View 1 (cartoon, protein in one colour):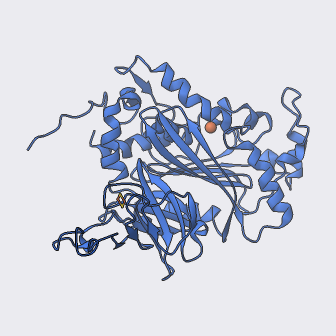
View 2: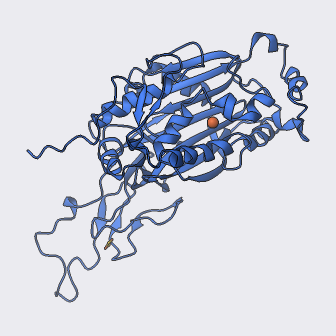
View 3: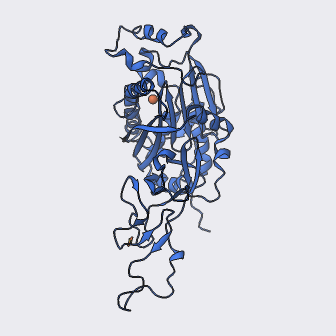
Length: 412
Ligand code: FES
Ligand SMILES: [Fe+2]
């Protein structure tokens, strides 16, 4: 056996140090594709409502692999690699649509909605000449098919046939936190893609980083949306890879309704919003949790910031680049008032969001900061050295959890 040498040696036991080379060395890219994106993991690919009717399809990526997600006429959702069995062209060029079948533009090989090769142009040749040899058998060719699993309106897919069932992969605590937010039929109310000039794992860290939220995002503290002094904590799956953080209204803020919130808006440094109704919200879930950020290893984020609910999909595009696809959702039965609130609060997120604008920049600050520091490492010790659930948020436990899952997947 030609054993490959390990890509790096992890500097210390545990996850409190992360070598910067993982964010810059191209060599990681290929290994991550194989072990993580094509490996035994589940990847969020779309919402069920995006492929609601038979024939509906959507194209997206799992890591670098282009994939098609479709609903066939049997009502089931299928997924397959968007790669023609002939010479590798994309089978489907659209972002989304409705189709009875797919046909590759290059030489017109065709596929059904499950990605099965059904037609080969001129298979029998022309007037008895040419064509495929008698040994050619369509059934032996086709793009790789995906396993698909559904949860609370989310569609996850995996290239691995032996991946654990989705609910086992996530664990009961994370499943419950997903169902807590996505508890009714969904509707897409907006979307954007943010092109980020940083390694995908820097964003995976950022989404798990309860430490920075009230420090980097001044909008949060100025308008009292989340502070580390508020109640809450982090739940981390046993694998480390998935987490959910929650911030709960502090008891002194419990003054009945969110109109109390309006009084606090201008407390800090005299800043005021010209349109304070932008922050109007209601506790629609009824448990007092104002902000819940949840991640699923490797690249999924579910966000509830007040009534602003969104899913984010991390798609690596190179060692130092990634796309972040946001889909904002509401419920199909939203009242006009609630829908309006969601859309107003959506100003917080996305490429120019009052909050996530900084997350779009800070990954690149790291990428640039570590440009010549492949032999150095980050320090991730806030809240201790472990990556277990904690009932406070001044911690980096969920980031250590991500690296625990990463090391397991990459055998580092
Ligand atoms: S590459 Fe698709 S038909 Fe030739
Ligand atoms: Fe952030």
